[in-house]
Length: 411
Image (cartoon, rainbow, N blue to C red; front, top):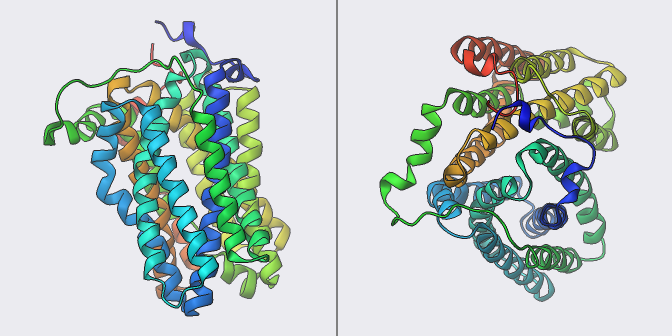
């Protein structure tokens, strides 16, 4: 099929497909529930320990399973029915949230059971992410896929904004209330996936081997567009992420306190939501490679200006632009990677992509904090933004096929 034959559709095109509507609603409930659960978990752990390090261990307990199970999770997404994998993962999420509810009701004096449950939850997320990502292209025809990516991104960002706020409000009525609410959200997501029917898929018939596990890595390296897009996002966010340092900007540089910190944190998500909505109604049709690199460069430039700014409104504007630019990059990357990957390989490639995303976010926060400790907060943010610009320039030179890519769908 030629590229012109599958040019992207805009508006509500993806909503014509019942399976996508169910998937998107389930996704919205799931991500909201995850954020409610993690906010409640962090508050509960801090109430018990009063130790900042204990809070850091929550993130470690959630991230390590993704590292360990990336390859088998990707292979499972290509080997088994992806809808079934999601249902199993959602059941595990329900069980974990219910168990945390019981712990909260009974009261606890030690936190190791919480960490153990977070690890189990992390394993379910490790398997759910590649199955969900690989399932999305099976829910809509190719000409509606970019539109589906845009709406999926909107749902993700809205849940990311609303989830922590909902979790904080519910925790005021008791930690058990927040965990019970998360359980209900996961049950809702599970119930929405059950009615999905008639999903196109290409399952693997061969047995699981080491070669099949690492096939996604070999495939990714053989496709410059796929490898370039995923690695560009990894290093750009790794260097340019300033989110971890926002408390310092709120408390010391902009002098706006905790309330202002919430405002700073909300601006990248607001920019991302508005850009995703724009992309849903005005999809990118041409010069997507150049636009992706331009977005990454804009992300780096906005980071530099934010790092130097001592004016609240300029800082908010920079964070808004930063979030919008990142959404352009995410939108193009997700669409290119999924459309350029055969269905039988999508699970394994999506698993590697999930690992890269997790690494860029988690390690990016560590990198920002470590560099700030060495050279200061403002220089660390400025150097990180400059590093993102360097990455964009190098990747444009090293991955010319990605830079010169004209359309989202290869043709």
